[in-house]
Image 1: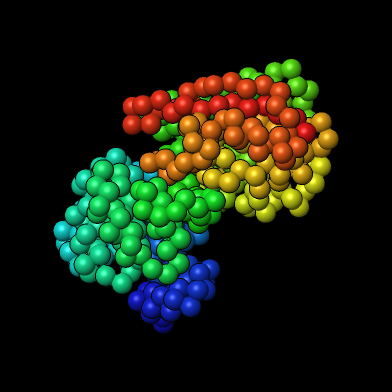
Image 2: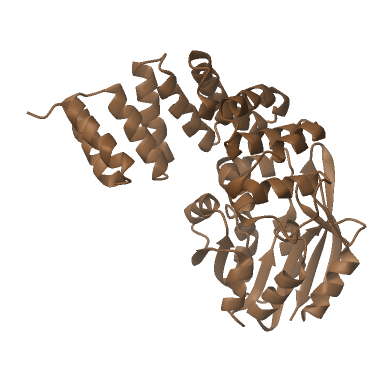
Length: 387
């Protein structure tokens, strides 16, 4: 008769081969043979997290830790799952315990540092992230995490030094951080991978933070500019979790959303606001859908683009003749600058000149405070234009 341990080993083998469904089936069979088996619970939690099923992942991880409270492996997996779910205080507690029990766990040290940074404790994040870089000096992930934490902790020299150590697939993101620190040329846009990773991590706590401490108002302010506009086919660019969709829905006969972040799109899908959701880069998506939309809205999206000409051209292409473009920009005095928050600021007059050159004619313009950041107002501009 096959034992639970044998089933687990077969499941682990399938898991390593990427045959996730087969692995899960074997783990479940093991759990039926040995109820509450901590290894089976832990492995099912890992698999559920990989499949994007965070509620199941959290439940399995909690049962594993309850069975063996001092397992650094189980605590590490639970902490990583809690962080992914946006439960940062609990994640920090689990990961702190994991690295206390196993100080050589570089991944948990990095996860702890990233959770501390996300929780607004970048100074505390520096020690675990430094330890992670010492354990794996050739891995780019801990160096990039250290660079971000140092920037948040107002230690630009450390941030630059750490970013310069990043190699390989994360080098473009490190270059973007260096540009924000004034140590590299300003690129035309934020790297798509940076934006995707940023908002994937932010998705579980996005609504609470934006509507709470950040006093986010941009979608409602933009919607107030189109109260006289008849409803039409509407595209919500950078739709995120659907906060902007709530404001746009009354103005849409058909509402579609577009975003780079799959986890943001999952949150948006749960609202049941959108007739369709698209995971794509706006510069790729819009030119493929000429004259499709009556209204294209972009709330706090163009802040991740330095060169606005391609975006304005793409928006004009995807609008029907006479269609409306609705967008916000963070404002500055220079034609374009990369702010400390790693978002672009644009001179309004310069931006409107580019919009006009792309075929977008100004209808209405309003100055506004878009949100708060570190207790300070983020000044911006709201634009309604037509093709």
